[in-house]
Length: 263
Length: 263
DNA sequence: CAAACCGTGACGTAGCGTGAATGTTC
DNA sequence: TGAACATTCACGCTACGTCACGGTTT
Image 1 (cartoon, chains in turn orange, cyan, brown, blue):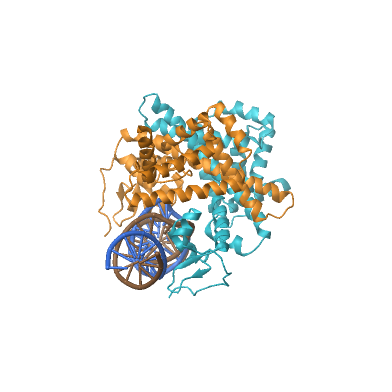
Image 2: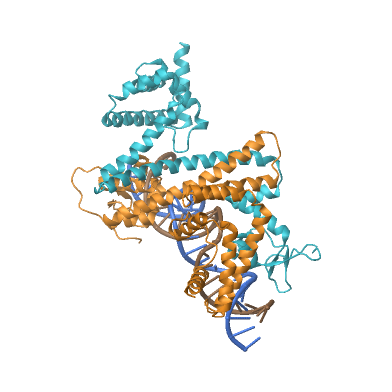
């Protein structure tokens, strides 16, 4: 029953380990060994006549690799692929994994910072009302997005933004958000109705978007340039950064822009 | 079928949102809303005659809280408790959560550091052989344990340890590990045979442990003291720090020590 | 012979994703 | 009336933990 026995040639004098012994030796649980066996990640190189698992030196080496890769945050499936198929993709996998972990750590950083601030309030003996509670989280993540976006703006643009921020109230923000939402909805409707971006109606939508953008840039070309760079580099956005509209809407805007410049 | 309807008094003029609308508004998926509903975390405050969910302002506020707490890394169950039972335990939960996240981040730091080193090798155009691969992980985590343990030693002790480390080869380490393993096994056997720690056999075991410890401290009292502090503070050990022996074995050693001093 | 160890199921966990089959709203 | 949206099952996924039941080793 179960999987076929896969004994390999036993070298004379090789030391064999029983499951629990092997487990203790390597710091994993017996259950984990069972799991690795069934999933094909690590099958013991021997079995007794009655079916008990026997692990040898080669198994030891393999398990070391598994544990190492687990430590680096790879999933069991990935580990299997990495260990079974060889070499080349490993480099890529590592770089990818590194990016992933750095991102995760970043998320943790944000949460930790927020929690620390909340704890500060608590330590001051105050009750944590939900207002400030949520505000802290909002501030932390917003602040972070700002910091992150900085890299796309020239120092000149950064100064200008700081200047404009002074008149940027939450109410204003809310209103702008709504206007964007309304515009996007209109554009989606237009797309579903196959409206030509070059048509009058398409151009009107384009104009509205330009006005909204202008509301942020304040007509400052340095800010506009930074904003463009930021948009162009979507591939490198952090994962908690969601793009404001779909690719279709984006394409519509570009087409409208192109048509308007052609005239 | 399913859960009972839980309509509440509808204030005139209140705006109602359908599931997908509400989902988009708050950045969660419709499926998540279903999930929160079934689990009782957030039940829509209304339903249409035909059973479609209707979310109102109060639901909005609650979902904000849920999202906020999720961001801080709480589980849905925890969130439910926090939001349903009120205030007091919140402070404790926050502090606990903070510790947890800091620990997690620390683990990530280790993995990231190891990956960065590996990537360094790869970037240098070298093939990553498993030797160095595993070595890197080992070095990183070991180094980290050392750094962490530093806080328990006086500067004097630290210097002494650095000195002793020069003769601390991997082979020596392996041998000491084995001796500890053998000793612990013997002690466990003794415990199972109800051996009195004060007896000759108990004392012999105590002596063996003292000799092994002395092998690390080198007879330096400053090191011994730091080691004691470190052991005494098990409550604050990081999670990847596993105690070398069980509480029973530990108690046996203490009893043997006490008996030897009494004489 | 008893204690300790081994094996194979099989269910549980967290937080939804992803259909499937079917009714509702616009 | 058709498209979009809604509902309720119900299985899938990660990496094992945790019994349960029955054979094996010492």
